[in-house]
Image (tube, rainbow, N blue to C red; front, side, top):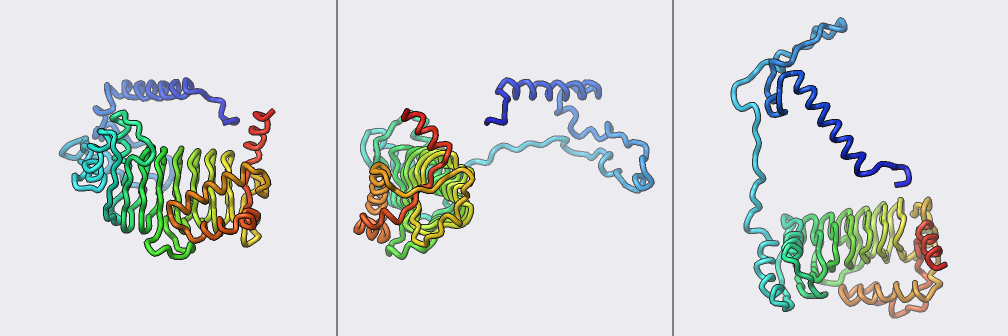
Length: 339
């Protein structure tokens, strides 16, 4: 932002100039619209050869008109009627509009993509503001990409199984919980890459590890995972991320705001963290300790995580094993506000 001095008016002016330039070229060729120019191969004229090899190129197929439609457009294909989101909407909306809570359960497979997006869109379009836990949906199986995308406030999704990439993409106040039915060890991968991309608010609790770019561009959600791949918290601008296990390289690259708490049992987290914009701190303030404990208690409550339980049972010793990842610029802003 500091390097970009433009304004929305500048962009509008640029596009206006582009349109005027296109219009000038069309007028020169005798066309009123771009549609009139489509398919007019007779307007293509070959330049005189400019090199000894240019006359060897055969462009006859390009400049030859063909019979048939010169332009063809297709409408947007209809969304199939038998998709999981439509079933959820049909089962939930009567109760939601009546102000009653609803609990639902479904099987899910990996072709069920973006589950929750249509439900959230329907609720928002109807102007409904839901209390926490109004719509509670449990899924069993393996979810397709973008499970819980754009989930709005008042919706809670629990997945007993695993999920693909982009879980909680654009999360907007809802809650996503992923756990294994057998409470298996936290080292199991429970979700794919780019989980919580662009999340603005809400919560996500994952009892297991996730892939690369966990919480990339998170700007307000609370998220817990028990291990993550490369580029975790990349470009994060808000919210709070808790990692209860190992991470890959380049943690916190471009992280300008928000806070992360990382369990540093290996003692080498600094080697995995991109230190260009952040600093590492011990959890010395009561506020940090309370915040982390509250998040771990919720993680245990929603997932039954054995790791969270072990940390909470030995809290006085456990809290010293965490590091706080604090963006330097964000720290300065908070200090200035405090003054």
